[in-house]
Length: 405
Image (cartoon, rainbow, N blue to C red; front, top):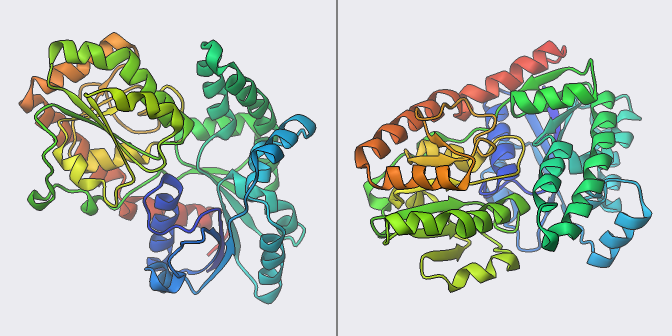
């Protein structure tokens, strides 16, 4: 089958969430015998596509410089337009023109849109009667609802809450329109699938979870770092609002309680683009913000406890899959673990309140055998259910259900 994938970011190196998913799907679909073309935005410093593994996985890769929107433009769109911000984020006339040309040059059995941002190009695809699938990385309207619910509690975040309230309503409308316009929708979790079905009853939806190549994260003695004996770890893109909120809440509401019981505790925040809101955390001796690292695996193998104190989010967290595959002992909120087939006390500890979260962290720091037990169970689950070898067949089965071969 010949497929055209539309992506907002070049999916290599596969470090961020969307890139991890797209790269895994492309690799798996190529191995299944499908022919793939990729039309993607790229940053100025992007390695030439043919010099990456994607060059061997795709028949054709066409790139377009990523668009830039000023804060002034975003404010204008927010106040003067009724469209969701995501529809404007990655719309570029050059991309639309090239897409039109590619659809004219060769027949595709399917166009697969990776993420809601890229649905800005949906009208020109459906105008050609082209079969198309939307791969929903999140239930985006519900994500904004959760962000609004958290931010409205703090007067200093009311401006952000106002933004999220508007986006929540606008994204509901957008997701309803998109789901009603495509041949099928791919959701990353049962919870997301249920939310999208409520917006667009009758839509054909398949759940194809996020995945990873678990072998890349299995512990290796040569990848150890000296982080101390009570190292806590969080990883992620650190200008992403749910991640920023998670770290501020954890440091302000949880970390002091942990330190009272375990004085040597230290939190490592690992990930690119730390937001300015995290600047105040740098003054603490028990917090280290690393910024971008090329490989998170050494940190995963060296930390005592992985924490996922997320209070907002949708889809499933690839960061947790990485930690699970690495055999980490994990403490997470239920929102953080949403969409994963985990149970409290079996693969990880689940806690939503500051005190119970701190208690879970302290208990694991004091219990090496408990950490090993949880880590082993989490690793077994990740390898069995969340390796790409177990996930790509679900997408292939959905293609067949839609009458695609």
